[in-house]
Length: 410
Image (tube, rainbow, N blue to C red):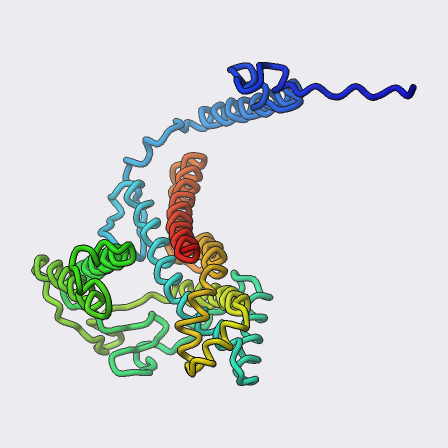
């Protein structure tokens, strides 16, 4: 009789009775099938980390550097060209890093919004029946995807720096001037008015979003009775949102007088200016991300079955309404998960701003590390900041994706 191989013993099954794993069974299950090997590997990694930690601490002590984050309270003593909040060189390193983080968030928010709008338009145009338009969009996408982003940023930076001086500034539309000192735009004359307007806009968006959520969950319908359906709730939500924004502006007491840039002598006065560094970074990120988003939108639209198009045409709907009311809502289930990666890439790619002189988080942290010698602490702060921002974006996009999935299941 042929010898039968002895079956391997399951450590989890033999460690404790079935149905009652117990502490021993859970430990064995956690370690896996080769606990000794994994324990040795874990110990080796821990020893390597301890070795590097001891070596780093010894080197920092030799150079007179005290480990820790106490340096954040010391004066930074360096200028930052652009900031959303007040900043002086006498301010602390912590405030300087906050300025850099806000600059990064600013370019990420504006870039994400513009890239989404342009990318969706290009994705729809890519599927146009016009062969010239479709070929142009395809060529744009291929060029952008086949060249490094850093090279694109250098190109846009050189282009903006090559604009004429203030006296020969380009004036494409009234009140807007393009020169080598930046893009000059109409702006609120009173300091701080722009911040209050942004706050009012955010409040209006929050109230409007809450109203749409209440209506989508049929809470508003039960509250307002017969007007819970139709166009009246939309108008009501819009009215409440606009009223909230107006209330914020009225409560702030700021004047919304708009000032226009005017050439006086060798430079412009009045209005607002967008620096060449920020403009180059924003244009580069938007152009690059829009190409990726265009391909995502194209794939999402093509994932919708042709029967949906045919059914909508049978109802007599024009192509524009078919795309807006039938195809795009169904394509979102494919588009939204991929858009998350595009937004995260845009945020991470903003770190290339240091190459063209924009004071983002990476630039400020590098300067702080060079002046203090606290390299590890500075890198930890930068990694934590990017990780936090990306996790927030991922959580918001995942929530939207779950919302779309639940709606589709209904």
